[in-house]
Image (cartoon, rainbow, N blue to C red):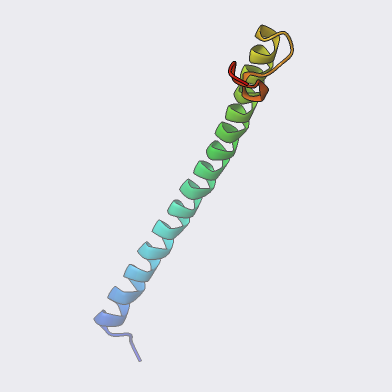
Length: 70
């Protein structure tokens, strides 16, 4: 018994959908890695900025300093 053309067409579409899903999965995984690296860099830059701010304020970070009217 030979498959009908409709079944063959469905198999082709399923195969194409699987290939696309695999490609998209790879793209998402790559983007997740890039996002993780970006988050690490942002954290590092924030720490550097806080250190520089603390040094400029003689060891007191601006976020920790009380306003002048206190």
